Each structure stands twice: as C-alpha cells, then as structure tokens.
Image (cartoon, rainbow, N blue to C red; front, side, top):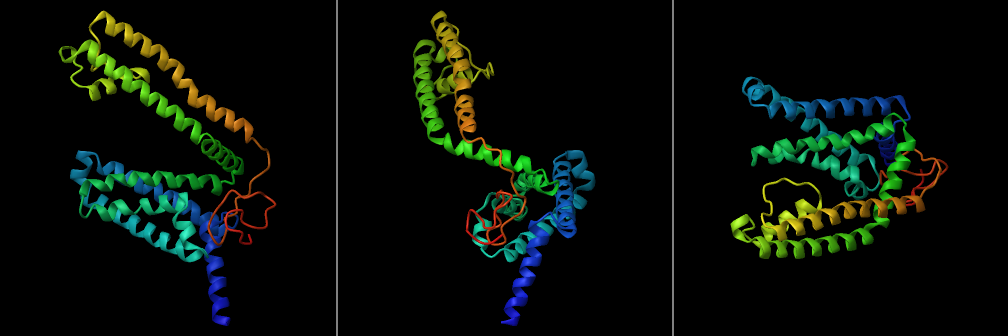
Length: 273
C-alpha cells in the first residue's frame, strides 16, 4: 500500500509539473517546452532551404533528432502522469503531441515527411495557459461549441454548394466545350468552384457570350454564399455566449482543461480536481 501511495504521489507531482502552470516548476517546464518547439520548427524550416541544407545539413538533422527524442520522452511522461492515458491520447493536445514526433520517425522511410514537423507549431497553443490568459481559453471553448452546434447546418450548406457547382460546371462544359479549355466535366466543376469562391485563378475562362453570362451569375451567387457559413456560426456563438470565468487547471486523470473556476470535479470524466 505504501508503495502504491508513493507512486500516486509521484504521478500527481509529475502531472503538476507537466500539465499545470500555476507552480514555478510547471511554468518553467512550459516555457522551456515552448522555446524547444520554436527552435525545432526553425530547424525544420532552415533545412528546407537548399543552400543552408548543403552547408549545415548534418547539424540540422542532429538538432531535429534531439528535439524529437526530447518530445518523445515528454510524450511518454505525459502518458505516465495521467490516471487515464487513453483520454489524453485521444484529446486534441494528445493527438497534436503524437503527430509532432511521428514525422521524424517516418522520415527514415519517407525522407520528405520530416517537413510535416511544422505541425509542432500547434503546441504553441499552450502559451495561453502558461500566460494565464484564461479569457482566451473561454473564447476557444465558445468557438468550438459554436462550430459543433453549426455542424448540421453547415453540412447541409456544403451539400447545397456541391450540388450547385456540379450543375454549373456541367452547364459550362456543354456551353464552352473542349475548344475553350473546358476539357471535361470535372475540370469544369473545378472552374465553377474557383469562380464561386471568388478566387479566380484565371487558368480557365469562358470565351462565348453565353458562358460569360453564366460566369457572371456564378460570381454574384458566390458573393452571397460566402456570408452564409459566417452567419450560421455567428448565430450559434450568440446563443452560447456566457461570461463565467474559466480555470487553467488540467484534470489529473484525463488531462482535460477549460473547467469552471469553481469546479471541484472534471466535467469530462468526473474525477476530483
């Protein structure tokens, strides 16, 4: 029993250092982590420059592997410091932490995959907790909640847009034909998407009067369509707007964050905070 209590105390202490930013040790850990992330991303970016890679390639590879091994050790310690490792592994930060180390190991088989390490920049989101910007945590939770509430409406909207671009693309294929660059229905659908989103690459353009008239109609519809998803999400955000403060404390069992400031139990797994 004493040995089990000793392990439990060790795990809670490790959790306090790795997941919390309220103690000097926890804050120092997060600051060192963020600096390491920035340096590792800088090394990956420099390695993508041909002249620098030719001159300092071996040094950059050594730096890359050093940070990867460091982050691998950190990932293992995060696993060991939570009561429910699977909860952490499937959380947003857990997946980002895993994806930040996998590309280096994959580069042993697929060399170019190491440049995917720039995904480590997502780990910088922890700076909000380090600097105790709890209001930003609240806004992030609000935005996520609004996106989830808007999911079905946006899905219907996207299917509607998809139907429209298929119809418009097919019409343009019939009107313009292969002689004007619309060599197939898929390529014409690509043109309709580019036009409706007002991107306008200009690699394909209608040459006939009827085609230009249809293109003008698609452009006008595109301006109206752009505002729809924004309105949907904004409406959901206004419904879910609340002013309660949020705590920076992470659950010692599942590592979840974003609890109410006066919460005594985790709202995700029910464990004591």
